Length: 387
Image (cartoon, rainbow, N blue to C red):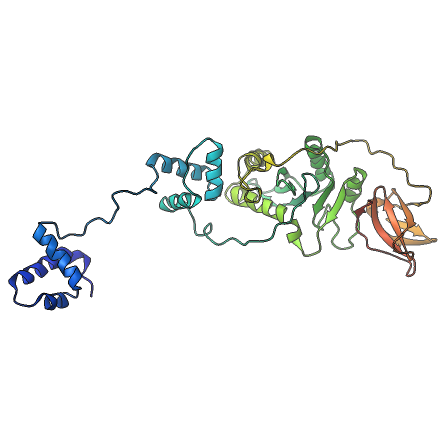
């Protein structure tokens, strides 16, 4: 049985006295004190040399991996400033600020541990997944509403609208909205278009105001986007991972702001959102970008926003049809419900070269559905750009 810590030195003195008395053999005395002969000789030799019988410090005389105290203090201060960022991100930020010869990310993590700056939640393993992304900025933006929360006045809800570029991960907008209505979304999209240009497409889920999960019909927002030559894309039903980047964007907003802060007004929330978005785009390194910031990978769209919707002319071969106010179109003298989002708009019916039994329903530069001639019904009601 090992010697108890609180009586170690006294026991070692007793051991030395018995060895000196030479009544029993050295081996027998070691067995009595339940130690090996090697350990026994170690303490006996120390006694002969006049050294203390207490334990010596195991701390090495030279620790090449020990960082200077002032650097450790700066690392911990940076962690306090960005408590939700990991060691790789904080190391990269410090490098961007001009710090030289920084230790490894593992050493950063050890510094966090020594200073109790890693919570149990943060240390849990993260799920790894395959990332898919567009090749260039503005090929696709992702748009979503983060779950609403109640302001401190007890009456007003905030609905955070988030928009993110798929390629560069740039946060296009984070807006403290009063509701989820179409006009408000249009207003914020116009602001984004004027600042960043017009994207080629925008991905969203099937909830309102950009989708209709019940009828899968086009919304007024879908139509408005197509009028500005933007392809509206909706993720598959019950398949939110299609919007993975925007979901992750919302999660970071929640973990870094909404989880710990409350706001009295929408204006107060917006000021905090603006501050956080600048930090996200310009300071926070992104692992999917090789620890670069999103702003380093983003370029504005060459397509400028035009408030006036240009008149569109269909080809002479097209059968032009006006959509009624209740969303119907008439094909072969028979009415078919299509979408109230297109009410008052003109669509066109043209032959489908790939299938003579079908016709394409066209709106401007987009195929928005197909008409099955054989079964006399509208099918495949989703938009794609005409090549």
